[in-house]
Length: 185
Image (cartoon, rainbow, N blue to C red):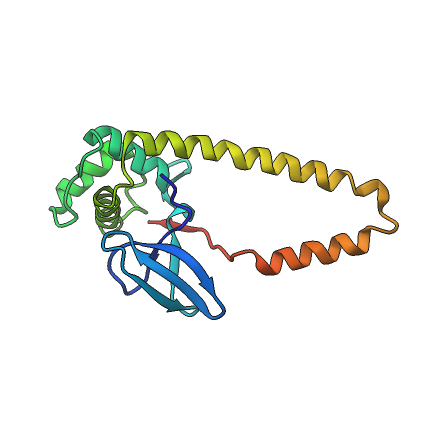
């Protein structure tokens, strides 16, 4: 399951997939209805890939929590987000046994259950989807090591290529999407 393009928009129900970027916004697609619409840059957007949940000793990426829920529920839908607070807390204990009960609120658990069920209905929650995501997580590690090698290669040639490298990296930074890290709880 690739969460990198799945977003939540403040004030809009459901989950959306980023389709493309516009000059002053984005084209998004509802993951359930597949209906496309555009949003402006001023919309408060949260990438699911950047959301983590608190435990007592660390932060666990949302992807891992979804994987725990999927395995526990046999890759089927899970508890409704409209369940009682006690049922939701019990559900959370199964999904993430050491979650921080002081910093993860019932509202966060409701959102977790709702998002999981939306992703399940949209076809993102399958046994295969988690295997594919694990293999893609290894690919960026290779890319990082390649970038380190590239960074090390120009270092001896600091006299002339230094200026073009700085320009190239600044133009690459302009085109890179901005991302914020958000935690649930």
